[in-house]
Image (cartoon, rainbow, N blue to C red; front, side, top):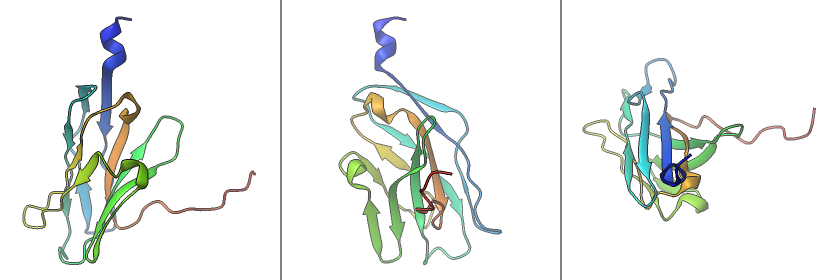
Length: 129
């Protein structure tokens, strides 16, 4: 494996369908970039009510649980602390776009990313079974 490969990032986005009429669509395929670059992951949504939108981005690492990255709501927005500085998403209700922009890529950013309407991940029962 060449040294260039250690600086290669592979980011994957996959589609997540939400409630009946509301949905999100992400472009298929992987996004490949190098450390230090900036990438934008697309997210187009279809919702009847574009005023009361609750949109989210999640990060899913191999063998991990989805991590809340950021959300945009009618009353404001929230970024998870570890994603606050480099992860940004601007909601455009007119074009129905909610792209995620990741700046200054790091190897630890390699993961699957997905956007969603409404909360889709909650803290649940955590005891061992």
